[in-house]
Picture 1 (spheres, one colour):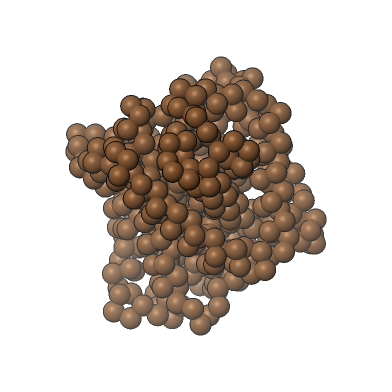
Picture 2 (cartoon, rainbow, N blue to C red; picture 1 turned 120 degrees about the horizontal axis):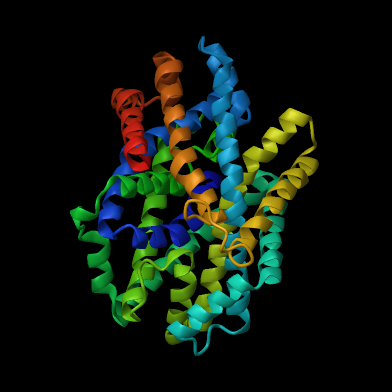
Length: 430
């Protein structure tokens, strides 16, 4: 449940719709689902297996397992890469989580009464220009995350996920049903599920791989550390299947929740990072009981955002405890302080330093491209190579207990997944 809470978050509800809008709609969705099924699932199973077998933070888990299998201790570098990826993602992710908390406050105080498309866009622009406000809500999001990490996975995150994730899912279904009645739904279905194959290109495929990894939560250390906490009695393939089915379903629901509003009000599907903040308030303003629905939605989205942040922070804290012999409290404070420092620059890149660009990217663009379209695929590739070529087949078979499905998984992780990721990386980048 904790791992599901990590996977289901802003990557599905905030990032998936706007990345889909920027990459051609249904063609991107098709490639994303294929990547999630044939690349994401095998790597997810491998990463959880490495964590449970290694019983440590990612670098030490990789090193212990490599040495026990007769491999090089240099494989610990993969765990370090995963931790670095988590750190970079968290630095921008916590700012977006701050937006969600801020919009929860707006929902509580105004309920978006009378908001139209122009007002919603103007309001979001005002948020981006308010440096003090963004810093405040970013720090609040980090404080909430730190509180949960302080109390640990079971006492902190798992209890909240058991109740709040199903509630979020139910509310999303209700919003999708509202869209069926309110209008724009047919256009959204066509946009999401009728692919224009001419829009498939290497850059888009690389974006789909990055989104699949980001959404599922692989190659960023979280799944490996949750694997270390997973009891031996619980099936890893079962855990992976639960995570991937819920994660993909929520992402598609998010598309059916956002894009009907986009088409109903003539908005731009490629609206960028602010897409949900410029669309949902308009819908809440016009629907019956919209004030209550807005509060519930942003409350649950806040929970989803924070539980995902916990999954990014937990492995960093666990590593700090191991490496420096910190107490959990000290490790949490040190990690969150470091993230806060980089998050300040993320906030400023939306306003003060927005015009400073490198190769066409602002700072957030650089962090996003580096972490999601380079570090995540490279990290996933190395996990696949480690699971397929370093860990003995007998070890994997014993840990996974897949029965007749073991051979297909093993062939995927050993051959198809590495070749696919290398091909996508080379063609997408160069």
